[in-house]
Amino acid sequence: MNSKLLIVLVLVTAALVLWYYRKNPLSAKIEIGGNRYNVEVAVTAAEKAKGLSFRDSMPADHAMIFLYDHKDFYEFWMNGMRFSLDFIWLDGNTIVDITQNVQIPSGATMPIIKPALQADKILELNAGVVARDGIKIGEIVKFLN
Image (cartoon, rainbow, N blue to C red; front, side, top):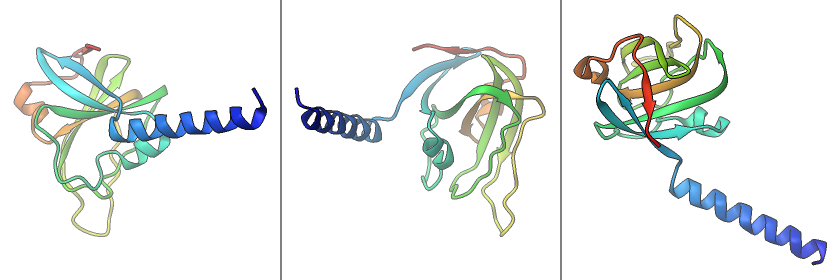
């Protein structure tokens, strides 16, 4: 096979994969204390930067998880957010911190949200879900798929 044809095939394949994942983001199902959630997975820097920004809402049983390759005090902000969130900070599969009812910004100041302990995964749920479902620090998050 000549090298130009191989390059074209690789580029076409890459374009199709990118198109597919834009239309069908990576997702998973998790369970916390008997409650199940459908989770959109943010892995790339672009997915993490966008997060849930510029969406009008998220279904009640949905969440977004941000995956990192090491623990740190990752900082989040609510840039472009149109609805409030609960943050669950994970070390492995264990909840190490919870930040509840983070409101959308109302002025020019953009508050920074960060955990009390280092985390390698951050789960965003609709505001009020942590209280509604009784989620607590120390609980284990089970990844179902």
